[in-house]
Picture 1 (cartoon, rainbow, N blue to C red):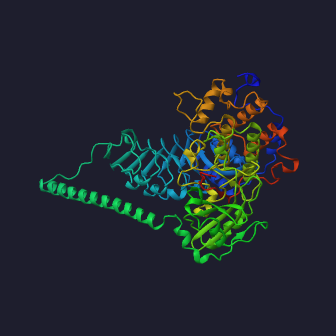
Picture 2: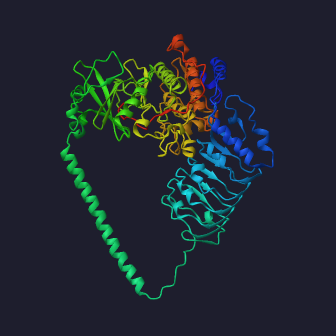
Length: 626
């Protein structure tokens, strides 16, 4: 490859454009919103533990009231760097003495706790689930903890990692621990435990996890000894009963699948158009739609039903976890998108209240929500139609006749999408983490202006305590877009959104899919980010660029965007730029196109203080045809 690409240094971290200085000056003006409970949490830890190495005394300075000051403490990681909300506490091998610090309960957003290799004594709190209820990773290994493992630990249902090895714990491992369905790592080696090991529902652990507990038994350890058998009659009876039971179970399973097949066939025959639900609300056709846009004519439910042929399955243009999306064409030719929400947990009053919030979330780079309707148990959302589909389908062409996106249009889409996400993160009230960013959620209007879809739907589907941003199902988006730290923390963060958007930028520059790289050798089995990382390490980053782009006068811009993308997908989330930074960097790179005006430039507000306690969290719902 010739031209400027050979002259450039393929260092993902380097970015030399004039806007960088302005960006950091703007970011330095942010003001934090301190959470006193988390500050009290750390104060309690410091006061309750004997700090023999003087590490906490020297590092944890509570007299410093600057923005995010506790986030700079040794061993502390915050949910957001400019907000005093603790995400993880890592204090291993620090010579800490004392009992388990119960004040940790005040760190209500905590997902990781590592107090290993210290000298903690006493017992694990009997109400441990109330102290660390949302912790994903718990490491109390190599301490002096004694007593029994509390049964209440089984209520810490988010645990992925549980390490209690090298202590003085005794008694039986509570069998309820086996019900921790997310557990991937478990160790109680080198204790004084007895009795059978738990039967874990979703995992098996090696002998090493139980080593040096002479009283433990059961798989994978030697079998537990029961009382001696007096006669073989019991054995014969047991085998007989077992065979009969298995036979009955097999017949029951077979009957279940047969009846389910019959039920599905009957259901399909009863509802050939797939709109039985729509027919059930015909009596509510006179209900008026609540519209947010004054320019939109007043409509009734009957108008939507007519425009979508009674919500026929033939008019479904996409579907996902939150429901199906229908195209509806009004008599005047206006095309709309109508989403039917499924399994919403809200009453009609609560639904209307949530819609009042979403209806005020407006930006030129968001898909406009025009109105909504509540009819009996059905909840319908009405959106403006996006005639040019989504970015994914424009980049990854299906038909031979499809046109490749030229670089200026890719630049326009990248800048506009970044502006929309930055607005959601920094200027929207309430602040919104999208957490399911992909090229499929970036829709294109008639002028190919990018519009972000699927923001703010999670609370309509499941009324959870959203200030924790904790997702109990562990699903964070499409394969290839998920930030690596999500697998550990199960917590959505702004930097997770930045990672996902970085993958979208890589798609714009490379033309490759996030999970499969056509230009990579057959021996390469990784995803797009891993391929880019490999090329960067070999100083071959220019080889990643879409072959349709070089030599057309855009080489410098393409490579600069590639370097921004590289920064977004860094594995260490603290090293990624903010979404506001990403927007400003892209805007500076594409300055000559005048995609934004001075009145259109996104600025951090004077009171920008990170994320507030109450946030809207986006449901995972990527519409295939949007």
